[in-house]
Image (cartoon, one colour):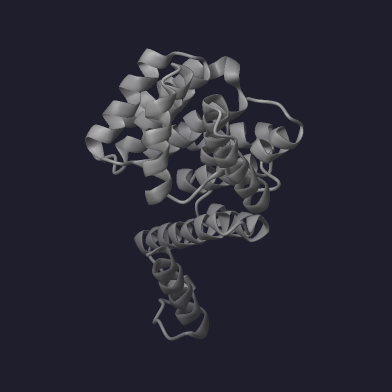
Length: 261
């Protein structure tokens, strides 16, 4: 679906550039027509920026954001994408500034609140309360398309400060909206592990691995669970997968250094 949307946007831009779409002459545009043109340009370039961000092409993503902001300087979705790009590049201060700009223009936007909450959770452990507040703000929007994401993210953040009861409640909320939502399922497994319920953790993890692609986090948790259970053959298998498929992840680095999270 993303690929189809990306192709359609690119095709639209090519049509404009080639003159195949009839456009009013610049000098003859009314204020309303110019505003509509700017809005459409900002939207398209922001969607392109998001696509390039997901593809890991950060330089091009930034170029598309710049084009969007030339069309509408206070376009909140563009600042949101730029914040995500900055976060990926470990430019924490720039990311914070751009998320805040986005929220200044649309303070209740659920996607922006969710992204900024996750940024705070990931990069500023001492600001977990603020992170949770942003997730809750996102969840107040009745039109939010993916509330399970904010519930699951809130659960992950609570688990990081060892608030297991609160984390469990958030994960269950997420799963009540979308059963088998991977982030929430993974969270339940981690709660079991932290509670010492290794048999349940392993059973859920086995099912999780059968239905979801491995991630550095899930493989690292698998290493820890199997190690705690004393199944060294399974532990070594997960170690191998983690080092082979995600050698640059923080989990693989921790594994090579021989330390647990």
